[in-house]
Amino acid sequence: MAKVKGPLYSIAASGQIADAMVFANWKGIPWVREQFTPQNPKTAEQVSQRLIFTQAINGWHDRTTEQKTGWQTGIERKGYTMSGFNYYVSEYIKSIRAGETPAETSPL
Image: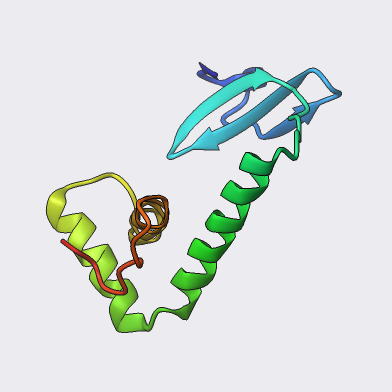
């Protein structure tokens, strides 16, 4: 992914040009890349991973506001550059892969 300054001679650009290039912004950094169509192999491992990921997201939605705030506060104390949601999903997936029950509250 290329970082760009003044994409397309403008202040900002987003979207795609035909099926060739994609322009976007990530955390305030404009970038451009070649357009591609992702593959969807639907292997057993991929389907399993998607199921775990879906369960993690549903688990986040099932958390109370206080629990979500706890995950966000914990991650901010550590100085990580991710959201409480991202940290929850990461920890959830690690727990499932280790055969453990995912934590409801932040371990931080």
